[in-house]
Image (tube, rainbow, N blue to C red; front, side):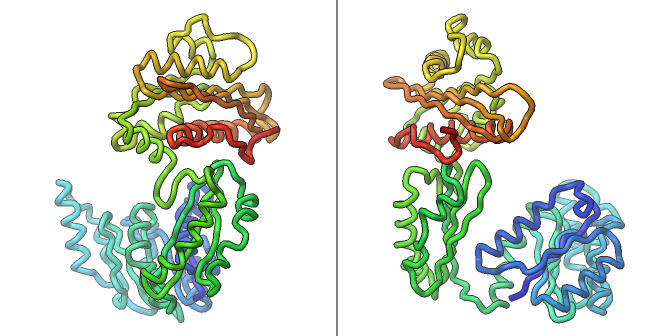
Length: 423
């Protein structure tokens, strides 16, 4: 099935906002075996929108239009959709009532211009938006079925997953029993994992298992898309492939499916009724920020210490004057982690100390990372060197620290070389 995505809005066309909606739609479609053939970005111009809708209606089987469903004068999707389909706009009383109730429940009066959002092409099928006022809808233009969605990301995502993807699968004739299995890893590059997993999809010879990757440094997502007659068929196909992926990637798998690295760390600490303190330089509190806001963190997270100078860090954890000068070392990180644990009363303390190279930001710029994890019984540490510029080092240090803490909690080796480290 040939699918096109049309993203609308001057702010998207001119780059004033990053078009994350297209990436999300395309990725979600790919996950269920539906590939996007074309992507078009159009500004808030009637003639350009009309031509884009007409062209998509000539070449695509299905089109997802994102944006242009708001109440303002530059929101043109309903009007141009009706024109392209050769039908009139009419007031949808049911949706108007939904909007009025939406505002009433929030003790607000609906502005008159919101009525525009209930003006739909007369042939349109309403697509529900349970969390907003922008009414999604579908109608035929040319040979294609068009699906109109709001630009607000959380509204788009709900509509896409609950209503549009099932309609597209039904239209495509593909088997609708699909399972997406995801493995999240840190420390292995995409080409390395591709080599490690060569042939795993061939364990199911009928081609119903598809292997894919999504790299977003510092993590890599490995995806298995499995099709089958029913749930049992999908489960039977996925089982051997899933086991082989776990075997080949081993300790580098940090989470699966909707899990996150910080969520896994928090769950391991909570299971032990343990607590955590963090100490960071250069990463600016990003390790603490990954954990402290999660549900349940109030019972686990004790304190986060952030600084840039080692002397300041030492003073903050009760090591005033005791932090050795000179090159950053594992011993320094160990001393800081132990002091932080004692000062806070936490069962675990993670110290991630970074010595950034001097000079302007460039691809050769690197940082030396010394981290330590202190518990009552032991202190584990490692030293790492990462190149790639300031942001690359910062992101790598955050991920490395959290992943080493995950490994320590799961009884895995804290030091296992990654693809991102300089020898």
